[in-house]
Image (tube, rainbow, N blue to C red; front, side, top):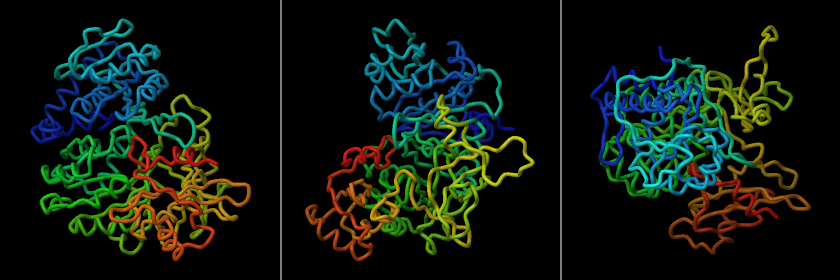
Length: 518
């Protein structure tokens, strides 16, 4: 029976030892070799004195060593903390200090950038380098070379309820928060998603998202749960995605909307699109125009529109058979989860009534690391529980507003902290953005609410589509006016060559709100 996340690799190595597990650039390792490397890394951590539950921060780009470090930490009984490689030293230092990491896994060039931060982060005792040791390794912490392969050396036994990982996610305000995930969370998520995606040992999954992002890390766990092949990619240009899909005969690709928008504009030769079995969207609503374009590019691939949150990994997906009937729906609950729509008083909403999405089940995380206040806000007793239960079940109250129709399909209305108040109405930014995309004049669009002394208004930040006139704001508004009531029409349009994105590739709404604050 699986208990901890590294057992996904163990079982795949036993079932398919010679099958390809992970590819990075021109190097591919099979499952047997991956398991040997994971064991060797786990043994090295144990040799450094890593104790059960100690945190290991992994600050690397996507490479085979990154995968080995994450699963090797689990094998040693530790808690892995993947750090987005795009973060700056100050942000990395904050995460390492916040979770009191004892070990940092990084590369020589990144270690050089982190010198000052590590001097301040007193919890770091050891650094393991994926590369040559520096001439001056530093005095306060030990610096160790990359360990070799092994067959034993696993850490103290644990159970699936133990902490497995901490994923840091940026909030709408304040510092990033660390979402604590158990091994049970990670394995249940992998099995649920791989079930409805129909993942199988013949799949080749392109990992284009950061592994510090829950959907990015799941590219590893869903693949390993069925013995599939993962191709790692450090995203640079959309054309690189096309090239790797063609080279490796990729069958599964999951991206966030800004990346899909770019990929929809690429030329996809037949060799790149031919093998794609499914494409999936997460991290926000995909514009319908983009979805239509992708379906034209990949006629043999099933589109999966998914919704999730780091606090519960994945909540819903839309069955591809329903995409034509309801392309704006986020679908129904994934296997082994229940999604409730709840009023502010905790009672359940009727069909057609807007309420907060509440997720219950095996994927509900363990809370936020060392943050009882924010944990109490988001992780609360599940609504409509049986009064006979002496201990209440904990659910995730997402902060997302949704509507359930008469057939049980859910529709996203917006986040509580992103809903726009204008002229006395509460407006979903996604509704405004969809209309902007439908004009064909913009490549990217983000709608924001801006307070003013009277009624509040909408600011629309856009980047122009190829071939359109960036200065033709009046033309854009004239087309949008045909689809929007006056109170929803943006009062101000800001044209930018590029809209800033967070390290996970999503539009950075928090930064934009600060920039356009009156």
